[in-house]
Amino acid sequence: MTIAFPHVKGETFAQQSPLSPEEIQIIQTYLAQILTLVPIAINESIAEEMQSSFVKARKDATAAESQAVDETWFGTRIVVAKSIARINAREKMDREDWRESLRVCAQWEGRRKVMKGV
Image 1: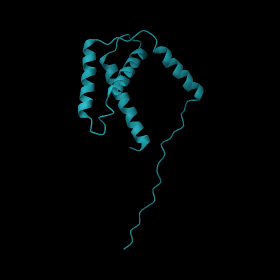
Image 2: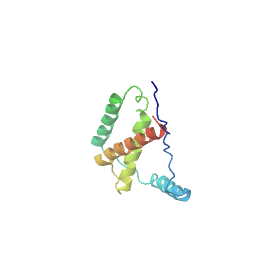
Image 3: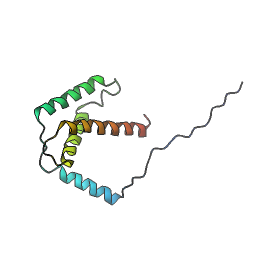
Image 4: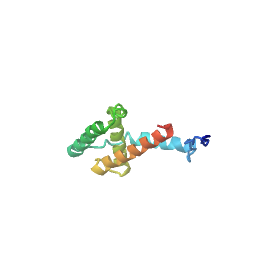
């Protein structure tokens, strides 16, 4: 009996950025400048929701993921939520900013895992 396995070439996920290096630099400069503007306030009820999200994520994480759900994980989502509030010209973060940051970060991390082949 002969068994044949097809040869499957690995897919490459490296993609060329649609932005030029100059355009990327402009975006980075813009983001650095808006971070120094008026601080974004977080009211108590949203802070409690943020803390609950962090605790839930730590509980729900598998053993392999548990180290990734740390203070950096939480801090990244806070920065993204504040940036979303700034983009929307607000001085206070709202619930939708926080929830959107959770979605954005989850999508980003999912893409990174795919690109790394995890």
